[in-house]
Amino acid sequence: MLARCVRDADSLSEALQVYGEERVARCREMAARSAERAAKAMRGEMTEDVSKWIFEWDIGQKSRE
Image 1: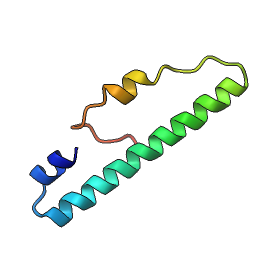
Image 2: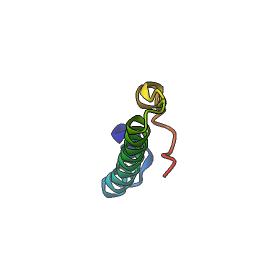
Image 3: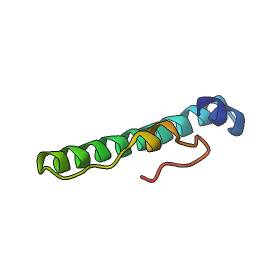
């Protein structure tokens, strides 16, 4: 992802800004999904399999923030 940001930006500063924003958005989404899964598990409900979302993520895709 960092390489894509550097490739597509007009400057290194812009690349790092975009990279940081995208990483923060993805981390927020991961934290929210984790909290949802934990709440469901505490209630004894089935939870989603997040392995595909985590490991098959397309770096060209923007986060869903």
